[in-house]
Image (cartoon, rainbow, N blue to C red):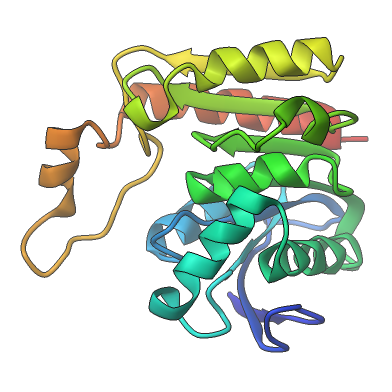
Length: 237
């Protein structure tokens, strides 16, 4: 269901999408952070999937203050710099989930692409577990990720923009003594867990296949199994 998250930093009309598990709570919570395409049906599907696994999930729309065209550059800059209203909006969403009567108070964060970068930054900002998927490592990662919550991360070996990111993250988290599960999937590229919408000039997936960005079913299912098991371990009682 569509919701409004209170106390946003970029706007007091911070939009979100809430997926609630069946049955009676309370349940551990998860904040879902979208990629550059925004809070679309694919991200809603990912949020629903978390609810099916027993998590009270809320996807936050980081473009609430003016839409993707106006907000993308500023939001992406916040992910790269580690500062900006988007981080405040994510924190507002974490508090909203943690304070929900149906929440146990434990909250994880998951993100895809741009959202994966935010999920890494958020790992030291009050969350209990983080799942960055093909997220860009923050600058000075060794310092930024010191004291991070447990992290489960997934990357594609054919992701040219994030080449060696999995290895670097593995090394950084090991040296920082952060509990982690980092996996690089051979034969897949960026955004392998996402199904992108059909555009006005035909299926976007045709272009994705050419540049190595297309969805990969087996890798996606393996990544989701790791994520839900990891969240179950670190967000459960």
